[in-house]
Length: 107
Image 1 (tube, rainbow, N blue to C red):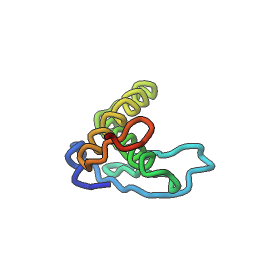
Image 2 (image 1 turned 135 degrees about the vertical axis):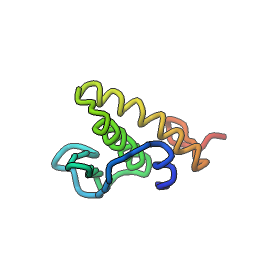
Image 3 (image 1 turned 90 degrees about the vertical axis):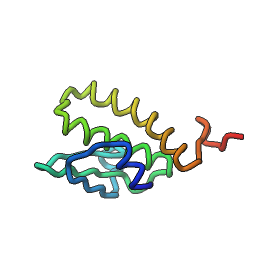
Image 4 (image 1 turned 180 degrees about the horizontal axis):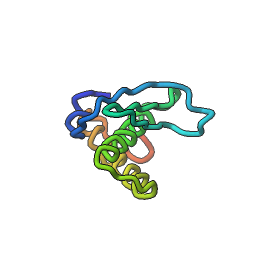
């Protein structure tokens, strides 16, 4: 995933570290933790490219929410799922790999 796309998508003040690890036992694709001015994003290490990109985008929405002080869990998840789809489509367009819902190239 292009770092320039991520930086263009978000205005993030925190230091963010992304770690790929096995989250199978946690039954999750990703997590975000806050530690002072740092935020630690964990992403499951066995995802398809689409899942990987969407998970990172989803977790970066949480990073921004943390910076903004948004704490309502339902609102956080609703917003993160909505924005991950929008941002994923923007990412695909920036990579010129726009896909249909069936993940096949558009003709």
